[in-house]
Amino acid sequence: MEVFRSLAPSIVRQIVLEEHAQIRAKMSNLEMLLASKNEEMIVKFSRELFYYFIKHIEHEEQILRPVLKDIDSWGDVRVSRMNKEHQEQRKLLTDMELLLTQNNFAEFNQKLRDFLSDLKIDMEQEEADCLNPDVLKDDPITVGTYTG
Image (cartoon, rainbow, N blue to C red; front, side, top):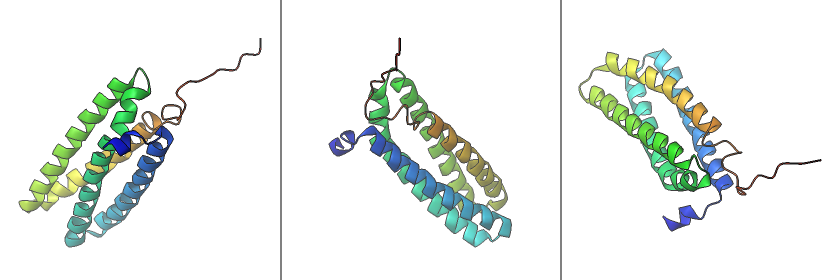
């Protein structure tokens, strides 16, 4: 855990953005499968995405949370929002997995579509706020130019 605390904010940003790119690729593949209506493949790729996504949010909690907490005066607010969002996402994934075990594919399919749509928005918002290069910069002191 201490190793993660020593990562520079710019490195944490790069790691999380790379993971977001991988998630987007998995989501894109899954969206193509949804159009095919191949239930077996949709379930397989959904579970792969869910597994990867859970690992991703655990990783964010290891490397991003400590950096956000201390980066500026908004750190606690950002961490609180991230914690709440991750809790809601874990619950949703659990609910969708339950639908699969109950063979309720129609409801699963709709929840999956909603999840993919919401996840795109969540990642865009996270990238604009928490992963913004003005937030996750290695030098927290910003010096403005004064020419007067």
